[in-house]
Length: 88
Image 1 (cartoon, one colour):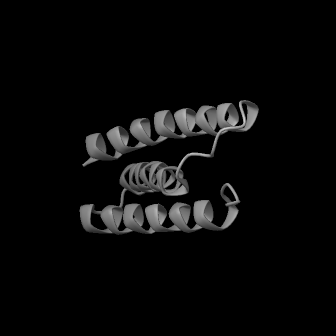
Image 2: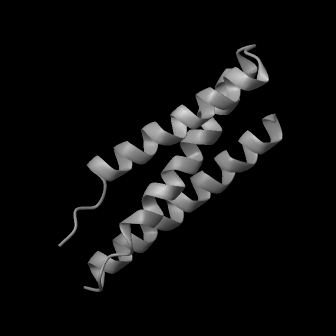
C-alpha cells in the first residue's frame, strides 16, 4: 500500500505544480481560469498520499492507514474548495 500512497503523492504534487502554473498563466494572459475541480482533485490526491504514507510509516494497520488516507483526501478536497481559486 505504501507504493500506492507514494504514487498518489507524487502525482498530486506534480498536478498541483501544473495547476499553479496554469492558473498563473491564465491570469497573466487574461484567459479564463482552469476548471476549479481539477485543482481540488489533485489536492485530494496529494492529501491521500500524505495521510496514507504518514499513517503507514507510523505503524498503523492497513485498514487504519487507508482510512486516514481517505480522510486526508477529503480534508484537502474541502480545503481546496473553500480556499481555492475564486470563480468569476
